[in-house]
Length: 376
Image 1 (spheres, one colour):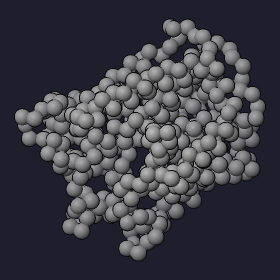
Image 2 (tube, rainbow, N blue to C red; image 1 turned 180 degrees about the horizontal axis):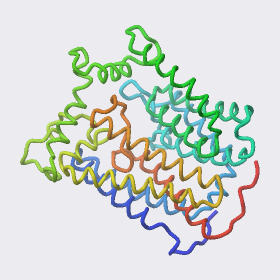
Image 3 (cartoon, rainbow, N blue to C red; image 1 turned 120 degrees about the vertical axis):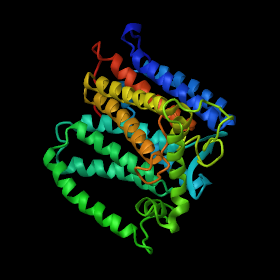
Image 4 (cartoon, rainbow, N blue to C red; image 1 turned 180 degrees about the vertical axis):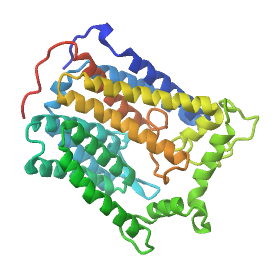
């Protein structure tokens, strides 16, 4: 359902920040892997078009289909297990009508929309046992399907996203305190178990990444930590202004293939080497600006569902940005998390642009009175 809005009410600060950040990403992807630059540019154009369409739709009307979206999300995630394409020991992509995409990326946006409606419907009884158990079961189903791919990084990301959503919805601090008293000891026990050689909780490659982070000086894990060390070296070599994009006249860790996956998970190392400290700072500031604009729009939203949508999208961008940069700079173990709007990946980019379109629509609706979401 498309509505008419005033042009001056559009958040052009957010749009400009997105265009600038994604354009930097296109340049960096082209420098890391020239053959992928045109695809990344096409993904940017498609994302902007989808964002524009979604931004003009009434998000309250979209939320009326929350259960249909939830069921469709489960079907897509189940199809990944049944007919998904395997790559590097994980099955995360499916091919429908010649189009290959990763349903988990779209699942993040669907989960935000579903719980925006669900938590608004249960705004008055959110802190009751019945609602809390129901919400945990509803998030556990997609998480289980994602974990089975296996995709631990997105399982953790979506779990964090759910925690942000239920907190913004008004979860009691008493419940939060009780949950932390349970979660912290469980996390310690989990870490103790996974460092054991015969543990069954994680795949061998997942355990190796953790062990390499904890024992980076151990020769046994030198191969696993090698990529992160080269990434740090590449970032440091860029110094203040970098060596320049597509500069083949100087020694380059990225051009020499010392940093693998530099067009996706380690794109920030390309930025560090070729754009230097100034370029990296610009990327971080743009990500912060986009996250801030999402939160600010959420604060001014007409209702709880709009606030949840904006804070959910902000959480995805903020969490993934932090994890990606922390991995590339060797602060966290290697997780394979892409940098929003910068890393190569069409599904991720278009999904994020859908989220930004929803944020823009929430911002537009703060100026006028619209009907509330119809009860389920």
